[in-house]
Figure 1 (cartoon, protein in one colour):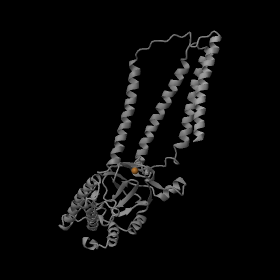
Figure 2 (cartoon, protein in one colour):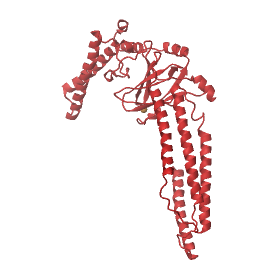
Figure 3 (cartoon, protein in one colour):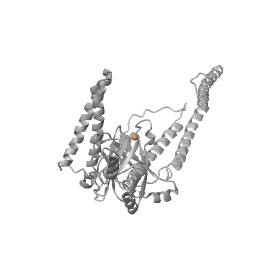
Figure 4 (cartoon, protein in one colour):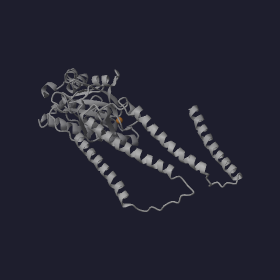
Length: 404
Ligand SMILES: [Cu+2]
């Protein structure tokens, strides 16, 4: 803090000193009988030369920064199929931008140098040149059209991958401030979910016969407590209104959950798809060379799922589901070897500032062989197992065997 203050003071003093020095030069020039706006030939030449030199500095900086940062260490090659295409598009853009940068800067600085003020030269009034205007309109238009067209092709490939039966359905569930990954299990189908089903144990609000039973017990219990508070009426008027609102919400929630219960019991919905779903909150494991379809949801605010190594980026929006399909093509092991970094991990980040501990929203992602993936997944407990355990703690009996 103190160092920052000192630095700030130094900068301010430097600005004041420069301003005073300029004044001194001005007075000195006036004493020599020269007007402030008069510039000598030597000053003019010096300025022109410095302009050229600044071009050298600019280009040197460009080469240095490109060589230092545009490499495997900072931007490792894409680890997904569509990512390779995205990278080639980005590289094409970089080539075009770099060429335009060199040509325009070179011309700009060279003209400033070559046509510096010369007393003997008179400026020409050059109003119009059809040919020149045609060139600088048509050439950029063609280049832009090519870039946009290629961009559209890559965008279409990325957002509409060809359907593949083997695609793994995986949910990324975001909330302040963590991620939960939900694997669809053996049936490869994600079970239904509803925000009315969310409780401390069932944070994703998944629906199953057991989860319905659990939620009805919890919400009915809550409503009884609130109901007795309201009935006794010991609360101040303001608080009483709050409690009444809470009660109305709980009753509405009970109705919705009871509706799920009715649908299940009448056989119109089975809710069995959620039974084999597996919830993971530490490391996401993905099988290599198998397409993955990410189904993204958010519980609270807008989050953004960002998997930079796979060139995957998509918002997670509360109240609606977003998707992104991609195919990992490089295992973590291969990437470690390629980057010569034994500590390397792929990562999932939240790329949308979503609150005070947004930076916490990060999960390691590991890409492994199909065999390793299958072994890992089969060792995990399912949503049905977890719900059964929670029910047992509440002294309730599971319906799980029946539901299957
Ligand atoms: Cu977030």
